[in-house]
Image (cartoon, rainbow, N blue to C red; front, side, top):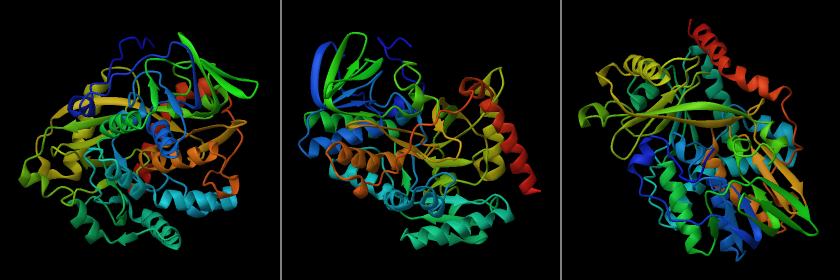
Length: 434
């Protein structure tokens, strides 16, 4: 990719968000105490927390802050993982898993607290997050999640079919659960707001400077780009789903343990007040139990921001418009004619078990990947934990369940075949609704 002139996606967020700060490229030889590769949510949060502790930090970003997944997603702030529940996480990671669950439980509130503390205008609405169930049998998912998250102190509540209908304005679902701490934000505004905040605290951000490699020289890490290099005592690699998109040699073992899956986002024209009041009247974020996920939230201009998936060649934009239009009219007949002003996409980093991967890459070096569609809330406190790690906080006090990188076998072939999983999800979804 040529990053000399960064091209932003034709997204709602790029259209409505004030421009980001002017940033230099990395040239010549530079130094910092901590180097962060990646200027998305994780990298910016890590830099923020390090700088608040008085640590010298530099971010090396391939394009511009928020250009990748952090500025392209739906903006739902969800304090859970997509599939694993607390007991799954603890069974996998033990005491570290318990600490991770605690961090995840508080992640949505943590994000909103960060925006308030630093006066970041990210159009945040902490209206809650709802997960309705799309078939009677899947109410067991909601019951299990309410039971497990309640055990860990999360403010969750089981919803009846009637409560779900009233909350969402649709008879399409059979109940569900909601978490009062969730909500939604403008993700690009959050990324750019964080960038301005850390710059104000003295963090250096080098943009349009894809990291090509890093290595250990003596007691320091050295990150190389096309025009320069920077060395530091510690290193954090925060590239997630885009780990292999700019340099195949940067972190190949991490890039190959996550499957970058293209996710499409869409924004309707602003809905009229009368219609808006009948569709998700409380303005909660919503994503349901379909494998081919149904999800929606409002932006600050009363656009319904939703999305979906599409496979195969052809005019994907028009095809997904038609598919999601049919879906919205089926879920909410009162919506009437649907028109989309914005359609865009970006990668989601998926792992085989839907759990994130957090790694120690060497002395004072850390990395992670595998958001599985839950990065918005997770990355804010995760950045704090990574900042603690490079500051020397003992591992037994960190909410970081470390594992060794395990690349997916035949990653290149499976990446080409991954979109076909959508057919599997559709078949499962249809079978459960029968």
